[in-house]
Each structure stands twice: as structure tokens, then as C-alpha cells.
Image (cartoon, rainbow, N blue to C red):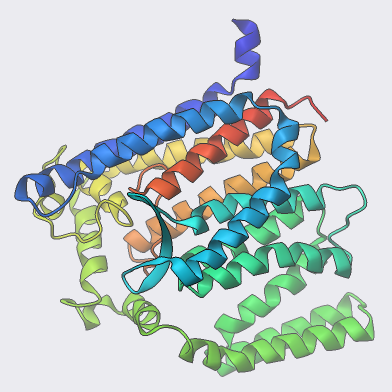
Length: 407
């Protein structure tokens, strides 16, 4: 019994199962009334089927040798890139985007699996002893692993999912040894995009950049290169804005002022905030939420399921969910620190970053702190591809923990 406990991460599993249970309860509530009214499918039953499939994947990944995961990293990455290319030509559309492949009666979203495939491929590359992400060559090769799926996914278009690849790049490279100074220079162009909407903010940030470059005694080439790149990012921002799809620009405008179109584009976020705010401390009770049961809240089984939990279980339910997430993330980081294998350590950070990014963006979106992006809430939102990917991630983390003493 002691031997099993030492090989099995109970903390990770309990937090994962707790979130899964919370999601199933929310899905049952959000889909049951709709089923009775004949206006929706039974998402709860469909999710249960994906849970069963996911359990088999989780168990299988827990028991396979760690070497198999490492050796298959590049193959899985190449296969997922191929699937993303196939989506461009043969994908199924929905809500103005082409993101799914139909395999018989099942719709699969390759972009979900591409997140994990990219994490594994990058981890295998930068875990090599001869790779240093602080050198230009190795940094560019590492960046290319992220850029390829980013371009293919943003073309679908799926801005929310494509941003995940930006979010996971720097934490993984930082964990692999990227120096703080280089991290600052990489982040600066992204900050320039936001700063360029206000001239004086852009000017101040450019002055800070120049001061930092001179203070850190960088070479003339590095100073000039970074200066030109950041100027370019400031100038190209209006072009990027104009090339966003109309619905993407509208989401950003509505985020700033939802009341500008309360019956149209702003309706969803307004109803979500009403649902969360009306839950109080203990909520209205299971299947007693008016916003949920009367179908005032759109997309309540996917992107806005957090609002269902907030309305029916109140601050208590929300706090429970957040505590489970924090426990899972902390445990994931602990696994990254415990494992002896460098690949496992870097991949663990990548997995935690993906899950944490989804949680922060989804919950912030639900309460009106960020624009609507369409990113699901891990383990809780309805979605087969997303849930199966989450199961696989947990299975891999459990495998890393079991083999934590293996180099």
C-alpha cells in the first residue's frame, strides 16, 4: 500500500476529480431544463461519455514508460500540424469559424490537442543538453514550434486558442533557463501593441526600453534590432486591428462598454455578471438559478458555465472551484520541481501554464474583466476535445510523478 501511495499523486488526482464533479453538476443543471423544453441536447450525458473515454486515456498514460512519451513528442507534433492543415481544407464550420474535423458522428477540434503536442515537442527540444534558449539560434527554433500552430489556428480564425501558444512559450523557456533580461526584451513588443493605442504611453515605454538597452550594455546590433522591432510593432498595430474579424473587434468594444448594446453583443456578458452577482454567499440552490433555468444566459454549458456555478452555488461554490484549481496548479509546479528528468520538468510547467491560462481568461471573461474569447474552463466546460486533452494532461502529470526519480 505504501509503495502505491509513493507512486500515485493523490493530491493531483483529488483536485482533478473535484473539478470534474463540479463541472458535471453544473452541466446537469444547465442542460436538464433545456432538455425538458426541447431546446438543447443532453450535454451532461455526452460529457459523461467523454469522461469514460478520458479515463481510459488517463490510465493508459499513467502506466506507459516515460521514454515512450518523450520519443513520441516530435511525431505527435507533426501529426497535429498535419491535422491543422487538413482543417483548412476539409474542416467543418461553426459560428463563423472552421475549427472541427468530422470523423463519423464525432467532431474533433485538433487545436485542442495541438496545445499538448506543442508542449511535448518543445520540452523534448529545449531539454537537450546542447540547447540553450539564450542563444539566438536555439531561441528561434524554439519559437518556431509555437509560431506554426499559432498561424494555422489564428487562420481558422480562433484568436483565443492561438493566444494560448503565446502564453505557454515564455514560462517554458524561462523554466529552461531563459535569462530575465532576455525575457524582458521578448515581452516588450507585446506590450508595445497595447501601448500604441495611446501615443504618450507608447513614447514612455519606448524611452524605458532604450534606457534599459543602454543600461544593460547590450551590443549595438541588439540595441538597434530591438529598437526597430518595437517601433515596427507600434506602427503595425492599426493594421492588426483592421485585420481582425468584425466579431473580434466587436468583442473588444463590448468589453469596454457592454451597455452600449445590451440586447445584442453585450447581452451575454451582462447576463453572466447578473448570474454571478445574484448567487450571493450560498447561491440559489441546485437547478434553482433563474438565469440558468430560464435560459437567459447564452453558452451556459461551455464558455459561461462558471456563471452557472456562481448563481446556483454562490461564493461558496466559486471558492471551492478556485481552491481546487489552485491546489492542482501548485501540485503541478511541485511535480516540475520534484522530477529528475528535465523533459518532464519543462513539460509539467507547460501543462500547468495552459490550464492556468484557460482558467484566468475564462473566469475573467465571465465576470467582465476581459473580452469574450471562447476559451473553455478546464474540466468543467462542455467539450469532448477539450476534456479529453485535459484528461491526457493529467495522465501525463501522474506519469511524471510516478517516474519522478527517473533521469
